[in-house]
Image 1 (tube, rainbow, N blue to C red):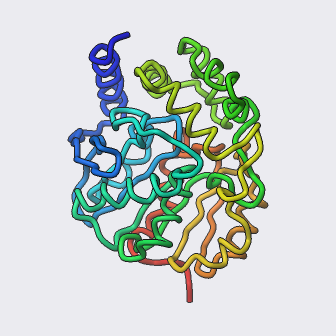
Image 2: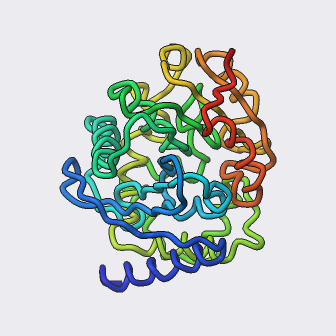
Image 3: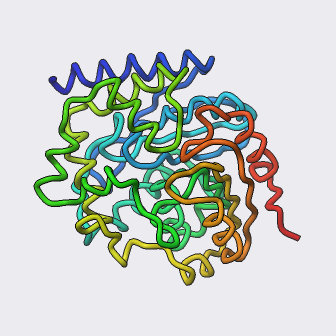
Length: 307
């Protein structure tokens, strides 16, 4: 598939998802000097700004079921490099952290965002924690939805870990995308694909974009070595104790990446933390968007749950 055809198919699938959840969003492309390209940011809602940073492998429009309940904020949902319509980047272990920090800083600069709440998922949670460590002026507070990437001994689900194996990984992720494969991926992440046809089709379109497979293999290989987490990428107790901004954890009761017990440990270690456990798996807003929005409402309004 050509680049143009892939992007057109993705754009159509993205619009279907937004329409399914009654969202009207501007698909804005912003210049990102650190990756020598542009990032797609979906902009919708009206009110105080909130940045949404999705995890690896899926595009920002995956947030759509949740975004419809947060319309009292101006929402900025960004595709990560290599996923969706954001330009690709050369992921390598030596520069992976710098890429994440500089990318998010450049996006926030382009959007004029400072000291705002950030709602994050999985790899997006890790990148945003790193950003707050280096640029505390940018992140006012952070809501982590789903188990954050590589926290307290957790890792990616087994099939995803295989993508980190040299030679094997690129071959595995380069398999032709299909609805069946996308359904299996959602089940692997603890979510029932039933009733999520538009979301599934968006994932298929994302996986069909030229460069997706290379980005997925390179990102996985940057954080894992032969299926094991690289120590420099892991978030342990010391890293959590050092977090200086307020964090609200919204954890799926059946998250296969990390159980609620991991969430409880995270909340105990973070200096300013609150925890809500909601129904669902690793992407609990797909079927439980209202419950996740309710768990976020007070925190986004400025109530950090701390005395």
